[in-house]
Image (cartoon, rainbow, N blue to C red):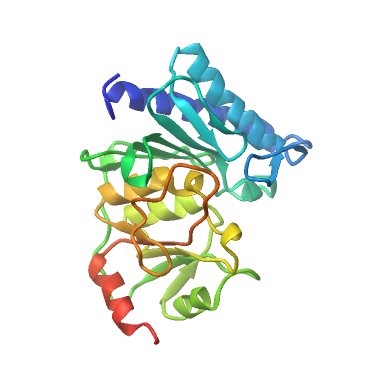
Length: 270
């Protein structure tokens, strides 16, 4: 298959459809939140995550696709390929367990680091909407091209992760937006920035291992970049060299209009 080609994209779409069907069946199961294993990152794996991950591996096996797989549940599975499928089978699993309709499957295909991602797909497991992008090919929502919105100083909407582990920087940023939202699903919130629904997404917790992993952001990273936005860490350092491995965590500042984020930097307290 050519890198980033339509055949590869169709595979990712088939994976999304299979996982959505499996998750919908699991949503009503009394066992959906059962802890069935410990993930490769040391966090518990719930039944719904294990079922979704199984669908992904089954499709790759059935179609004879040799991509390596990097998932937060099973870690890195070497399958003989020269590229890696970076997977979050259910981003927003806590929402799923509480029947809150904000969860996605996040799929990114590439090599080495975030800048090496060729294809990104984020699929809404409740609403069925699919966002995707290929390197140099633009970003789309259900076939319609999307782009970030120009900054309007009086109408900002921020997605900011808040809670007992969020940092003073997160609280300070939240106080500067006209409207604040928090959905508990990083990939979904980032693609909302990509399509112009929000101006910014910010996630920073008080310890590094509570921050985001590459599985949370890889697909949305490519979609946002192709829509005209970008992604930094909390100190405004580019994330393009962030590696495709589970052992690293990062804060995330995902933005739409670069002029806006540069203005924020100028106004930031010393």
